[in-house]
Length: 302
Length: 83
Image (cartoon, rainbow over the protein chains, first blue to last red):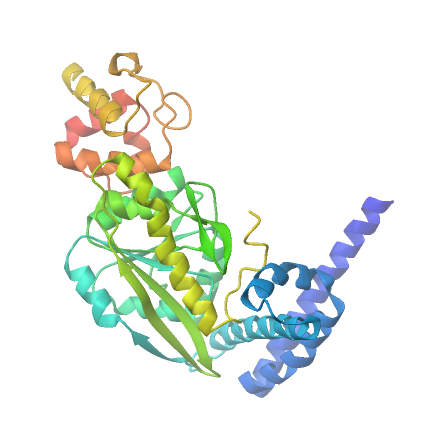
């Protein structure tokens, strides 16, 4: 009986979710992005008021980012981060429905990226689940070499969906992490050819990790990417996107480094230092854009 | 071909730093990854780099990787065809 109730509840929630998406798509068609943004406010307010789960999911990050905030301020932080994420989803749908729609972006560090590519040793663009990363990744089509994105299935579906809706070809070739040996053979080959591989640096998915400080607490970050770069001689550039206005974003190279090692012991000893470079860049980002990091789970308890 | 297999085994043991494994213990037909020798995906990165460095052979994609990395025997055949 309980199982039947659970299945019924799940089916109802699924229908409600689809209904909700339908309302947003209709609003986008009738009233455009401003209309959907306006609808977003009461929806997110209701969600944040009614759901204890969203507070549980966002609290580990928000209480570290804003340690001095009281309960009311923290409730407002939860609203802001959910609202920010909601705007990203609205933007994605708006861009998909309206092919003439554009986000206007600026990029800091383009010459740096081109200079690194010119060295011919391959380049890892280390990104994170921040801002409107799909729109920002669209910039990659302007790079002079092929770009590959090492992605989990969910990210692949989202990225492909975004470009499919726009009728645009995806500016990067997806290397699936659930493929043979996690896609590393293809990623290695791409870097050896002097091409670009983008990897998300802020989600553990098996493989080596390193424990570093992030927002005053110790946490594990994935570290396989640094071994990949070190083994192939590739540079790493930390590239993070931020939404800066209703129709604008900013893409910036937050750090560049070149992992290298004399022997395996030296490599393992430096894994933490390399991982720290990324965690410091991400920390600087969330200090500047606190409501645009969208890892909605307890990152410190993985 | 036997000499090439021996070279590959020595390269794997030495350059991937497998202190508990001797080259002569590696079965020619045993899987290299997960089972058999038990290498992992990051060993694969090193192996791809080493193959280019020592033999001038490049592994371009997942299909070539699957073929080459099935065992020492398949790796030796792959290297022999490509160099």
